[in-house]
Amino acid sequence: MPGTSAASTALVAARGARPTVTWAAVAMAAIGRTDTEENMESTGQLRRRFPRASEVARFVGPTFRRHKTGRWSRVRTVSDFQALARRRTPMSVFDYVEGAAELELSKDRAVAAFDRVVFSPHVLRDVSRVDASTTILGRTAALPVVFGPTGFTRMMHAGGEAAVARAAGRAGIPYTLSTLGTTSIERLAAEAPTTDRWFQLYVSKDRGRSSEFVARAAESGYTTLVLTVDVPVAGARHRDVYNGLTFPPSLTGRTLLGMLGKPRWLFDALTTEPLAFESLGAAQDVMGLINTVFDPSVSLADIDWLRSQWVGAIVVKGVQRLDDALDIAAAGADGIAVSNHGGRQLDRAATPLELVPSLADAIGGTAEIYLDGGVRSGADVAAAIAFGARAAFVARPYLYALMAGGEHGVDHLTRLLHDDYVRTLKLLGITRTADLNRDIVSLMPT
Ligand SMILES: Cc1cc2nc3c(=O)[nH]c(=O)nc-3n(C[C@H](O)[C@H](O)[C@H](O)COP(=O)(O)O)c2cc1C
Image (cartoon, rainbow, N blue to C red):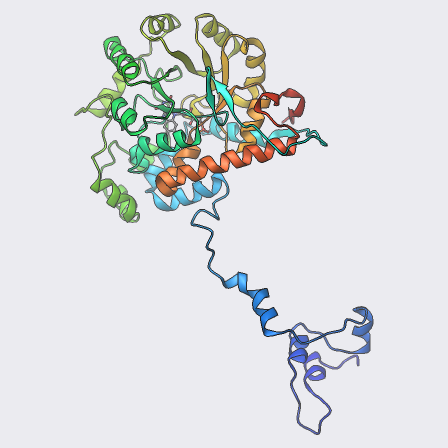
């Protein structure tokens, strides 16, 4: 009856003056419905019944049951790792990883470029089996991914470089140790003996010291030398200045607060070996030491100089122009990493994803081209390969994973990257990494 309140119509039965309450009526009242003829018409004569307790339990059970699928079940993307990393490490340490130079435009653009990728998938292809593997510099890798070099890694998590290298080995991909590593060349080799280990070199003002690194890397079974060429001087990373970040992290009023708020990180840092640049050796004057690490006079001739003492592959990292890439390939480099150092050096630098196609077209037959910067998923890896890269370098994502959950975190990241990559290939109608090509990918104009 129009005008009658829902509650009174539902709750008052016709047995004498006392209202009789039925569950169905209460439920109807709760959702503001009455069994007027009007309603019966609008619902098309729904025949209602009283649910059994077991049905209700089955319906609401999953909402309240504890998830037993493991602590990583709700971490599905690099952003999830990033959020966890932020919660688990002091702000100055998180910002050291997250931050970039000046206005951080290079970094943001490198990541955002992947939002412009458009795939054009094939259909009606048998994708029941997919081979995600590839060869990088003649060695098989389970995925077209390389973990790039990052300095200071034990500052992010006590597991440090060794944890990341072991996880890379389990995933069947190469790992690159930085000159500024907090684990020595030899210790990393001992801790991750089966990983394809690459060593990243900053050519030092003291060439004798650089030669010594090259010899140690060769002696310890590293397969590839990565010469980073975009650091004639350190970039201007303002976050580190605002945060008062020093190496090793020291306690000032500001940093103390940040570190006390992360007791697990602090406990690990205090109860494991003190942080040091293990390959470079201990130094009283850390900043002075770093200044000797970067030699602003490094030139093309140094590729020849390196070749004279290293028999393995040489990759030049930090290339942002076609003419430079041509010169570097002509000088005998085996690989070129198209990179702006994750935006940590020159700001307003070219975006790696936009550069890769032209460099791959011009040089791909002579030297392998790698995309370095902005990769955040297996789909991004697939796009990079389709645009002509041999492999994608990944850096911040494994640091987020390490900060979020140590070695297990990095294992979870490699699983996600693998699954995501394989799923993307299947959805593209492609069964082998080798079949990814320019035909299935384009970049939306800005
Ligand atoms: C915390 C941190 C430390 C890094 N240290 C080095 C380094 O020692 N040598 C080097 O060649 N690149 C270094 N990089 C740059 C990375 O190897 C890589 O070029 C860049 O981070 C790629 O971008 P992505 O983080 O978006 O993957 C570092 C990057 C980060 C985030």
